[in-house]
Length: 139
Image (tube, rainbow, N blue to C red; front, side):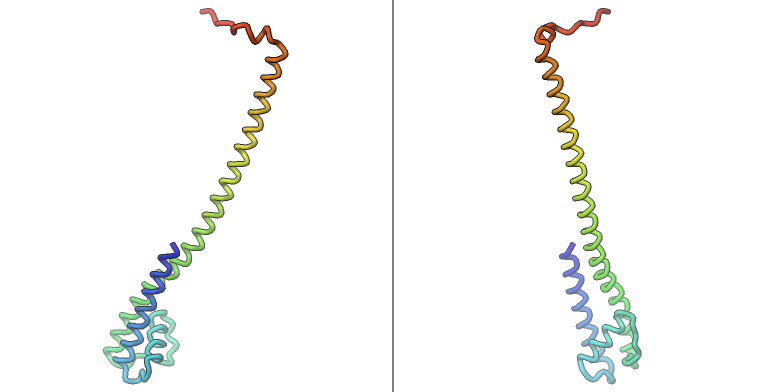
């Protein structure tokens, strides 16, 4: 499951780099690649602070693409993180359940040993009774 998180983060990084470069090339007001990366992140995360916005038609179309890609990829990252936490909780519950079953089995084994010891003691007290065959039921 952790591998899925790393793949999601890598994909997110690639999309953010692609988006930053795209805004840097398409928007005349985006002067540096750093500004393009910031615009790509705020657009993909649908934060939209308003400090930088696309002004050209090409930049706006690219922003729509970034929103769709950003929502998809950031949802994958969030889902991967949630899956890690849920997986850990399930593992903890399974371990606790297994320990409970183990304790119950050990208690049953002790009870069976006590019964076998009691039966053995009864048989040793009456050796003649142990040598006799059990009564057969008559039809």
